[in-house]
Length: 487
Ligand code: BG6
Image 1 (cartoon, protein in one colour):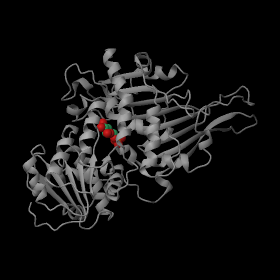
Image 2 (cartoon, helix red, strand yellow):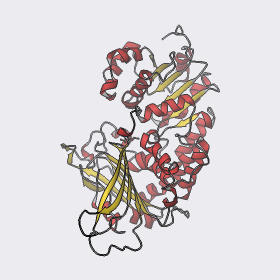
Image 3 (cartoon, helix red, strand yellow):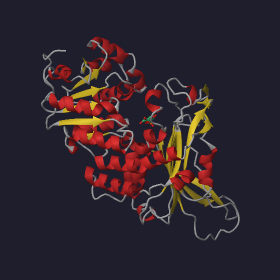
Image 4 (cartoon, helix red, strand yellow):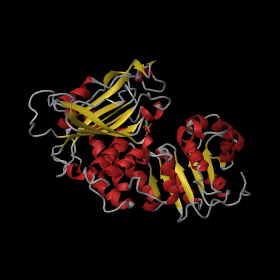
């Protein structure tokens, strides 16, 4: 690549440009932004990778992979050809400071530079330092940090401190793609844009909250990362806690990034710390055994390529959390996530308290009102109500008020990564994590990791394609509750 390329209004430099995340998520998201004319005409996308490829080789590599991750009606060869005109490839060893000259030689945009770090987090601080030394960081630069940001509190703090030497906090976008999901953003509108929920959104009117993020996929080709991480670090520390924050936070004074993040931080800081007795009683770790997932026989986690023999990494977690504040006094929050589960299904269930008294006497049992927010695979909001069963008696019958969010508007629903990338370009930080938020999440999660070690806790096996170990149902049954598994 040479400096003959004219300067652009925006350069997006992706470190890890040939990695899984890039070809599965980032490039398809940028293609969609291109297709819908959301990128400046002169914007360039500069992929940085280790492979000693030419631009053509990189385009072949991406061309053979990314299109399958773009939804069918949106992909067309002509638009793809237009999109790849924006793409450039720089082969460089990111640990080698002088090599950054190759990036400088591109004459990066003086208007806006976005550095997207989609590499292993161990490389983040080196990349930031080398970019700075090479004179590539200016006041208009932004850096996007992919999760996982560290493996515990100390490593997260070390990354944050080092990155802060080169970028101001307002230039740092810590991404959690769950915050880019339409339904997650909609949850704020549901809560704060409707008068009817807020007065009831608290103890004692809410009895419990469940958050489930179930996946049918296994560890796939990511054992190298996942076996050292596990479900608590990979999913709970970030995605599930962010969902919990949005359910539990107070109304922010505005939608400005810091106002929203201040409220989320308060929730994270109010999470009751777990001691060893809590961990033993209120957490369940699981690991998938052989089974049938998505209609096909599936290997056990131990048999997957790259998993260490005898690995104790959890692929499933269920736990009961508490928020120490007046709004949520004695309301348990049950969180559950796992790979190779029965269905791909992410839901938040708000279960309202039973009526203190019923005039309907005997007969079919009242079901509690439940607000069921489904994030994926479909996006919907259901409210479970009791109505009268037709006929002469006054018998009760449960029904659902159903709102299918997909069909409620003709407007295109962008994928999370597209939405968040556009936020980065526009400088909107509301849906990104601030440093103190991320560290507060680690502060709550780390004792659980330590506790499991101290208790020598082995993950319980569950059949691939099931809902996880029996102990996870027992966690709920103890309180006469059960996981909600309908779609
Ligand atoms: C990622 C995790 O952050 O989220 C993966 O690292 C997980 O393990 C993925 O599969 C799930 O994302 P989504 O959007 O498919 O629910």
